[in-house]
Amino acid sequence: MEIEIFDYYLPKELIAQEPLKERDKARLLVLHKENGNIEHKVFYEIVEFINEGDLLVLNDTKVIKAKLTLTLDTGGKIDALFLRGNKNLIEIKAKKAKKLKEGREIYFKNGAKGIVRKVLEEGVRLIEIPEIENYINFIEEVGEVPLPPYIKNRNIDEEDYQTIYGKKLGSIAAPTAGLHFTENLLIKLKEKGVKIEYVTLHVGTPTFEPLKVKNLDEHKLGEEWIEVSEKVLNEIKKTKENKKKIFAVGTTVVRTLETVSRIENIKEYKGTTDLFIKPPFEFKFVDAMITNFHLPKTSLLVLVCAFGGIENVLNAYKVAVENRYRFYSFGDAMLII
Image 1 (cartoon, rainbow, N blue to C red):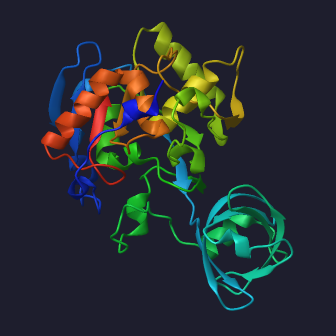
Image 2: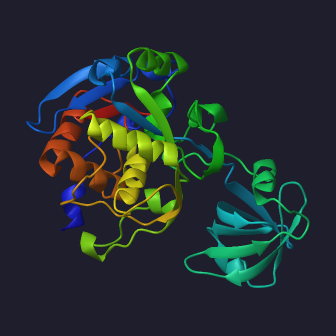
């Protein structure tokens, strides 16, 4: 399938540059995938579409301060992005990676020294930081929250780029569909009898990298860490047995649930996924999804089209542009049901 299918026109002024003060007052485009019908709502009205006994699944990952500024021994600066870590080793991706040769010393914001231990693919380097034991605590100390490059407003409160329920540090980008939920909205859903559970997918570069292939079959998605507990799997089983719906909040939850749906006799799962969801695809767990509006020619848009139907979704995007919806991370939302 050609990647050009998943392109669309978006005026730059529709790219949201800052979050709404009241998260649940974003607009909500409701797409009925069976007939392509569209409704225009406000996000807090999503309560109307999720019924008693349905299961809402959210991603409880939290964005780590993955944007790093490295100082070379010459005094020059290099911008880098933290990718993953283990004890006192971290992998980073740098814009001027040619300067980061094996054995070179670099320095972080707090003065800590790092040593380039391995030169990896496409600007990725393995860095040892001898002085530390826990890379998460270190990154939180020396880094900044990495806002997407299309957000030009850099005076954003870091908490605005976190979901209210995020608790497991590990993502380099927010699972943005979840940004619209407030405590009050979650309480209303619980009062209605909706079950709410959490899975984890730590968002890495595979989630948001543009597809550089002409044909989707040529693309391989990189690995990202996911966790699904026995409790969540039991709730999914009960929901299916009761013929109720499973609502996935965001593409990360869709990929997580559909990954574990393909593992036989599973009790719980902690490991990686490289599942690339593209049309045609059989969804085994997910019945409805909540998502933001995604960049053209990305694996995220391809996934949404696989779920809602290519023609339906691209038409919904066209309608969203015509109705001046706000796009991307701080933008409005879509419910596909």
